[in-house]
Image (cartoon, rainbow, N blue to C red; front, side, top):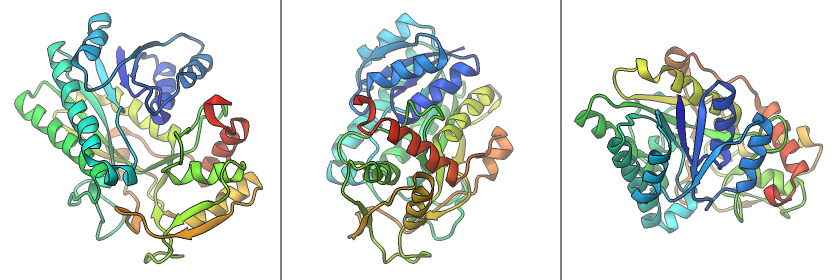
Length: 337
């Protein structure tokens, strides 16, 4: 099978590409490289020992996407391409709706043109908004608290409507919790442009001396130490969830919505302590005001993923931090090192 991976040069896309190829799938990467590096693809090729087809283009462009489908017989799409920073989405909501929502709609239109009707969508736990209880089940009420989360929720609804209009579609909606970690080789990992929006690259860049200190956004939440609690999942475990979903997608009779998390929540300061153990480096931090759109606690009930995908997270917090430190210490400036 030939799989189109939109956003395949990015953090999660690059790790998923490796596991897809190792599982015997053929991969075509589509990326505009606005938040990714071509160096990541070169390193993925070195890991898997083969050249990967790459087409540069914008997810909102029908012509760019048609070039892919004309050049390759695509059997299924794993759709990662999208803007992903909560804070930035609050500042630039229209940009997020245009890129994430409009781009996904255009992708589905072009897929239909070429009779490609299998898609795995990169959704997010942000669609649950501020949950009243944890752990979070897939049937919890949906109510995103920021434009990024709303854009993911809108695309979920679009895909469900696509299925209602044409039941030949095979759709899996994977709701991620908080991806961290890196490939065990240390050659690929999370490399954000500019100031990191996610916790772990901020911690690791501080440890390696690229940042003076970590900003901890809020210490007055109703949590174990006042800082936000999240379900951190190793990116390789997350990538494996996509391979399992792809292996089973033809058996699903209706759109499947599945959480990908560990079922464990860790606070910001607990993650700092774990990283200090793994790196043997001190991570300086300062408490800052809460960020707009952030919530106190968010972690998954991953039991449904075990039931329908035969998938569960295998890597713990120590391995996550060790792999991040290996990546960051070997690549202090990311892919431009």
